[in-house]
Image 1 (spheres, rainbow, N blue to C red):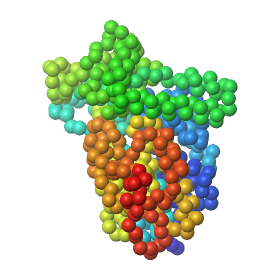
Image 2 (cartoon, rainbow, N blue to C red):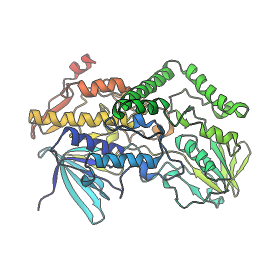
Image 3 (cartoon, rainbow, N blue to C red):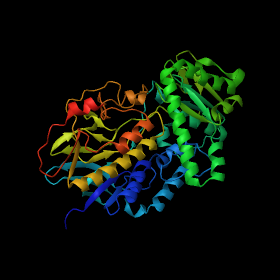
Image 4 (cartoon, helix red, strand yellow):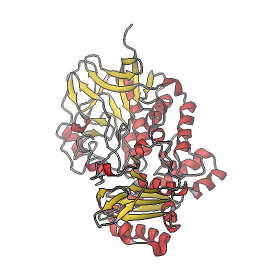
Length: 499
């Protein structure tokens, strides 16, 4: 019996993979596909993380799918609500029968003579292989197996639990305990008020550098009112338009008038904290949106501070101690539990070995094409969302583009689609356009950005909608060809002139 073949294999049953599969069902009916999920359950991020209070750090009217309205009252949603939404999507579009759980992709080998990917998969029964004409990678942007975990001096001296949020013990008892959370990003800002509200004795956020915080209501009053008077789909579309417009306006303002945006963000925090406000805890050395803004729904972090349940310490760590942590300024912070919320390992296609016609390839050595394909790697599309807006906005556009590409291959009778970056030069700004630690640490593990579109990123949903939906598939860089055809030089000068 031969190797089972597919038109499309989707890797990952999180928000990106589920969205990609739904688009296939809607726009490429009749194509044979499967979803390979390395874990035993669907949901990706929203099932992996179990720490207290885990929630979206974007509004669900833009983090939700374009084709499925978000109808919950809360726009900033907790993980169980998001998992319900994903499960509803899977059932609405008949995707559950296509998911193969505990199928972890280990190798991807492209053969141009057959125009097929051979996919090596680790299953509970051992290794197996499948073949596919096209791959859609919905594996996200970070390493699932482990978070970023620096080693601190003297850690062995502290005998209490030391926990990374990516590996949260669900039976952890922190009732009445003193907790230190190291970090100031989205995870720390979620954990700290949640642990305080759920019975921790006192929680200290120990941040080595401050973060810009943006306060907004967890419920979108505009969306909830609109849904009462309009059909849910129309209300969702209008809210989505409002929120994407606001996201882009804030980001653009931060780039053009950083001091004005900085003053507004600090004013919001100061208004919330009143006399408890201390500028040193909230004033980073960088400008807003040089790193991601940290969303604080309903000002929950600051309310916990005003109640005396939470405090923020801005200092460097000298070492751990028997009682907790010694800071470089000479303070000893006492703790029963230390949470090391130091971030993610950013990585595309973690743990997957990739070859093209026998030659080893890495994503980090490739140029990103339209933010979804890689130079000189055929028939592979990867969902990669925005850094400055909701992930799913771009992931939806990429899934639409995948369907357009499949239809163009069918129309032309071609078997292979490969973008060729002839003459493209690297733009040092990088794909993410952020100075965050996880971005800096990821150099070499994420694709390079070129100096000219479609090899550079715009970080703009409105522009991307036009380009991804309306630009010709065959744009002077993308080669469509039959099996065994000779590779031609792309019309680079023509494409650059058009830019």
